Length: 233
Image (cartoon, rainbow, N blue to C red; front, side, top):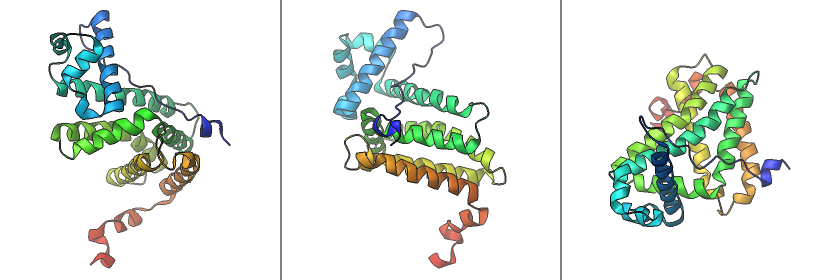
């Protein structure tokens, strides 16, 4: 059994975005606010993450909170940015491994994502926002932005492995891989029924993804489009 089967790799909570002209105390205060908001969202859900609830949990006045974040939308925007920055740092480390072939980097990137799904933060944070995005246009737009950034390294690796594919073809492959991994959250995430089977699911998924990227043809991709498939008529 691999070491990460029992001790999965997880991504740090978040990396704070910088602001022009900021100062240390303000930076530390914003970090406390975002970490508090993230904790409330994970433990109690998005609806509990009101500005007043965050201010109270931080031990500060509501007016002091709004000095840093004028609205919950501002807070959510920077919280999501801080969360995806943490993933981007990990992705960049994998992407820039000298001498490591793209297939191995694809494997490592997928391992990172699938391991991280087993963390409490990821299992609760992302599905909470997915659900909310069905009814909240602001959250939907922020989540779409987040996943565009998350798919970027996948697209880069696929382009290295398959320069013969068009941009649209690479994008649909990256989307399939991303969606397949994220979908495991509800079945094998933290404290989910199949969490103990995640190491096996990882191995199946990664072998499948690598084989698909190496072998799928433009004709096969086109055939997956219902409009081009005579059998769907």
